[in-house]
Amino acid sequence: MEKNQIVELEITDLSYEAMGVAHYEGLTVFVNNALPGETVKAKILKVKKRFAFAKIEKILKESPDRINVKLNQWVQTGLASLAHIKYDKQLEFKRNQVVNLLKKAHLDGVKVNETLPSPEQTGYRNKAQVPVREVNGQLEIGFFRRHSHDLVPLTNFFTTDPEIDRVLVATRDILRKYEVPAYDEIHHKGEVRYLDVRRSKANGKLMVILVCLHKDFPQLPKVAAEISQIPEISSVILNYNPKKTNVILGRNDYVVLGEDHLIDKIGDVEFRISPKSFFQINSLQTPRLYDLAIKKADLKANDVVVDAYSGIGTIGLSVAKHVKAVRGMETIREAVEDANANAKLNGIENAQYVTGKAEDVMPRWASEGLKTDVIFVDPPRKGLTPEFINAAAATKPKRIVYISCNPATQIRDLQLLQEKGYHFDEISPVDMFPQTPHVESVTVLERTEE
Ligand code: SAH
Image (cartoon, rainbow, N blue to C red):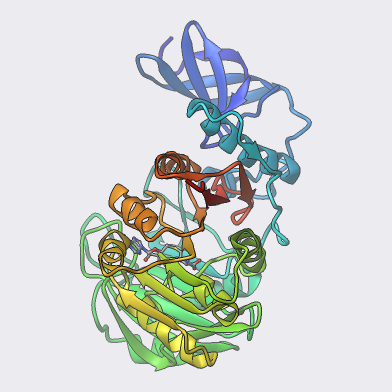
């Protein structure tokens, strides 16, 4: 097999990145956007020792699960790489990810529930971070083509709140009007690198963050003033990112106009959110995720609860009024400040958050003799560390509720927790990110009485 060769392939499976999988002359071939059950004429793009990549030239037999995508760019850019699959099949795809990972780990006995569907399947995101670049002599917003930094101009981002799209486009037009240069990645010059726009579902207010190469630029006062005139804008922030890096946000934020935070709500708890703080992006699905996690926790009025990887305290503060005490930790200082401010904002006096790595703070608490009843963990993709797991188990919680955005590391950690005397018998996938391959999952571990 060689590059540019045209081959006929039968797609038998979907990879975890949602590429069609076929087998040809002993090679595994990954075909962009092809679906199981389809027969395609494909062009080979790249050949490695044991696998190859290909793209569809023509679909010879189409899957009944395929739907027409209004804009091909959504799929091409990876903004919504599952958009060509019917929603119920997307849910099945996510459940299967978990099933397959369990099988690999020889945990076939664990029950995997149906994926909890998202109330909104498009327009669900309360935040968008979109690159700004010059394309054909004009400043554009859009998304990078998959595996590249070629900007594909877009005005409809499909998975984001349409109100956010409206503000992104209006801001783009203001930047064009004042001839603000887009960031030029190759020469590391220009000005605006990204637009980051967030919207509170609770009150409709929006925050616009201009991610810039410099702290200031000549047109900034006029640009900010005009952005603040867009209906419902409550803050214009400049994020200063002078580095040559793919990381979107720089360390420092400057409020140019308006507030330094947004206010949103989950259930009946109010949250203040700073630009640096993590906040769940699917506003309508988040309370359903938390409800599921909290139900599994089976909390009692006398419980001591830990909210690990707490962000702005959304999980701990949602349960604080029903338990004795909540303690949480998180690495981002601004998020911890938000968490403690959020406790006050909601009249909660039994919750306390500290800045630090979970793998450092938990061992400290354990050595101080802390005893816990329920620990919630909600780590980033890399999951927990053995240090955290040992210390968490040493505080003897009855239950550990594990919320994960990466089932592979979750299952790895569940096995480590099993060795510490905790058992689990089911995992519930929750769809937080429709149209994308991201899988969120929740499980509860119970201490096995010795
Ligand atoms: N539970 C929160 C946040 C989950 S996202 C919510 O539902 O909104 C994961 C959080 O873990 C982020 O806020 C991130 O800043 C934080 N984090 C990342 N690495 C960490 C570590 N080693 N220790 C503690 N927190 C960490």
